[in-house]
Length: 113
Image 1 (cartoon, rainbow, N blue to C red):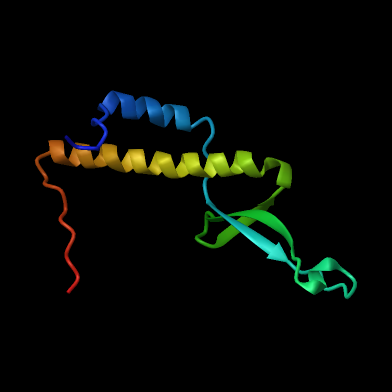
Image 2 (cartoon, rainbow, N blue to C red):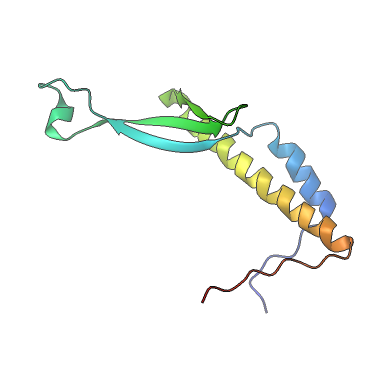
């Protein structure tokens, strides 16, 4: 018996896409720790400030840009970015199924030698 979950129907995946649109945020999340430079600050002894949560994304003209997230919204933003990545995965799955229905086989990945 396989440990894989049963394949979800297209309708189930489409409902999931709609649900994700209410919370998704476009971008990639990162955390940064900073040093302020004051000689008497704890960061001068190695205890950095942070984490500062940042979201980066490719802007309309192709340049990477981003914004800092207030600490109180960190978990909400993290959930939104996770929803965006889940949305992309589901959309790719549906596109692959559509391609298969057209009679186009799945693209085989080439092995590295």
